[in-house]
Length: 253
Image (cartoon, rainbow, N blue to C red; front, side, top):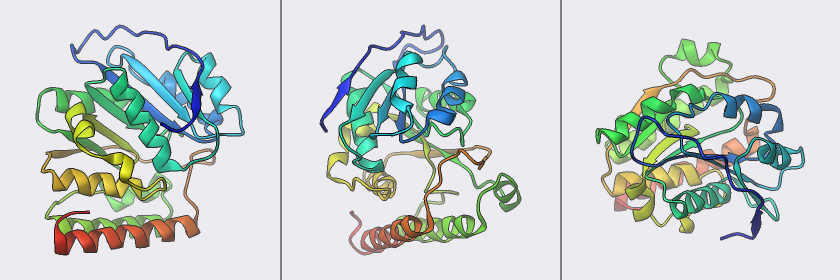
């Protein structure tokens, strides 16, 4: 595990709905302005613990997470988005999670939808549930998604669906839920520490034939919501295309 420090134990919430342990993970970087809103909207009757991993933020994210009573871990340096998720998943599995919900703490996604993700896995309809921002073009653009991001998302998703035989509406969401057997069976530590980690995870999930479901989630881009810049977006896009082409021909990543 990357070097870091856990500074406090979380408040224990009473899960009144599910017998399985539900943990929400928040991979955070400079999320101080939106973290409070995100945590306030997480349904505490569905979620047993909230884990935040801070990837060496410089805006007070870590201290705020402590004040909010979250299980907090801070990397000793900025390791990257993929590395952040790796730490999140390892901590969640170590703490006995049965279902792990990954949610960006920038308040772009609605935490109040967590029960729907959990129920679809709990009832064994799916092993993985994705929150899709692309229900219609009109809704995505009205929610503030930049035009170039929308069309890049549609193009990449089309290519990934062709390569895998899936029919997902979006491959690039930051709102995902996993049954523990999925995380336990995938060697995610070998994947990139960068943004393409998300694509590698989904291709590995398809490769292992886990059942993937989707829930439409309203998109909301605003000033304090995180957004990958154009240069990093292009890098992510080309890396994802490379993975898709490899999978198309050899059926593994």
